[in-house]
Image (tube, rainbow, N blue to C red; front, side, top):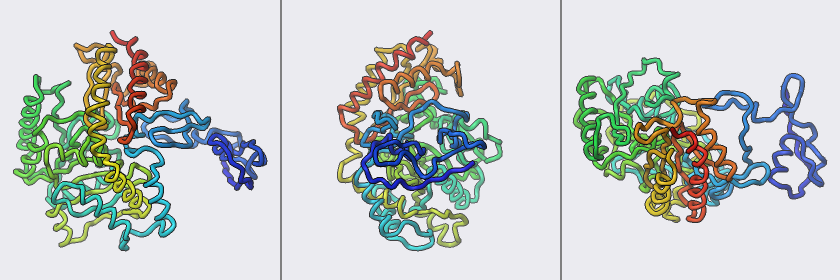
Length: 485
């Protein structure tokens, strides 16, 4: 296998498609010379190969894929190699909260790159300190320090480690309908089926049912009843496991990729009270919902709750450079003023990632992004998605908050049987595959997880683009209706 890249001498203007062809060594644009000094080649015999096939892709079976190749972006759109624009109704994996190529973030990264690209975490850094200050300024009270990581999964690992060291206890509680990451601790904490293939049952994790009225584990008939029943269940789990053995409870304040489940009012407050009563560290996993996605800076803000640790990533800098972190409460911080914290990361608080956070958070203040997210949900997404229930028999439920919604697809509304089974592939996943294909044909980039269509456009999407996306979803769902019993 070999790969050689040499620079083209031409400075002539070229298209996005040409940019990719040059990378492949096949550009024939005027003044380009037709190709690089030597084209990229792959395979033992030097046969040409799609570079995408060289990448080992997460969460999927490996092999050739029939997907667009994106080479550019602007605002709420991504652009493929042929110049075709797709409306990004997913914010990628719900992280491009300010859209693609936001000038404030790009400028902040460029400015930092001109000054200092990288720095070991043991040194003081002005941009790292400024990022921490801006994050703490919008965080719940009592969270006065930040451990920076390179993403949400890593941040969960450190939050759990801190809780165990702080309390001296081994167990951690997490909800069944949850996703906390794919590293060893975080995948065990994850409650949904993505855990199954990796769960060894040895991580000291105990799962519980959170409130979910649409598929209630408690046969509740109202949101208030569901919230109270879920809190009663959680208290029983704590008492039966032994409060003195439980280090932490990890909870998404709004369940994200496992179903977009908004808890009833008062539930988070009840969880906070249970944790306080039993000396359990309350870890809020705000990786997906933090930094404005729900129409508040953080999901816990909707119930006026301050956790002991708060984990973030994604929206902190719209994913422009990998960054995550743990906001640390005063009591836990004090623990590590008496002894060293026994962990670290080479790229903790990377200057370019922190610069992206500074640019993003300042832009969110200036553009009133959090208020815009609340309006997006209230005035546009909720009424627009609710109409889909009347239009399509495959739609079983619509739920969400702010800029995060889901459309749950079912075979029959009364039985609530999912349109596709858990882990469906091939023919079993035909309904969702047909829907996804219909979206792409109409230039919409959806986020499909199991039998759900998650709707999470950039928080600064304009009304016209939001309406366009909703109209495309309406059209594309016709493809799924044919599979309804």
